[in-house]
Image 1 (cartoon, rainbow over the protein chains, first blue to last red):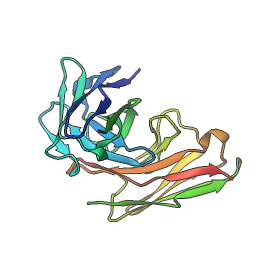
Image 2 (image 1 turned 180 degrees about the vertical axis):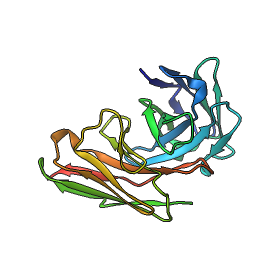
Image 3 (image 1 turned 180 degrees about the horizontal axis):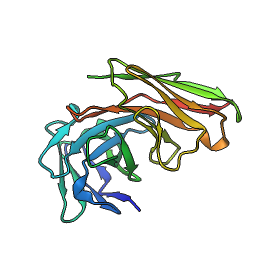
Image 4 (image 1 turned 90 degrees about the vertical axis):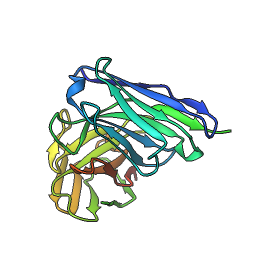
Length: 121
Length: 109
């Protein structure tokens, strides 16, 4: 069965960095685009970034552009989110998501359980 | 940028009642609209994709309708486990960013 397991969250001071990982299993990882979505405490869902199946194409929300980098290693079935210059407003649970098909579809069929990142001095 | 507006923000109903949740897009999204359910402490799960298709394992009491700018999620007869927050979501081909509505909280009356 499909599994997405995030890790790497924690507590960090403003201006510092964190690297999140998402380990995937149960499907052909290299065939699917993958995304990060975050949810601040008590708030709704905010899309963060996408990486294409081959890793060549990435796209970011304006709120993280220039500070976050999404990448993937298909040999390890793992996606990453490098988060630099962190701000208090980046505090959230970060979810790893799988696109619903290997051809374009607009929805996400699997979500990880999330990893919390807290930015605080 | 497409904005999704959900209404109402909170819906108070009793088990057995019918729930109707709305999602309106700021411009046409064709049928590229999905619905997710999120319970406290859990990740969201896909309910409906492409406006009207139930995801695998989703009970038949959940249905979606609409196209263009106006969409509806209907729960025909509420079960106790259906009380949760519901989000609508859109993503186009380019840019490949996704957009979520702000959510509707379905609570027990």
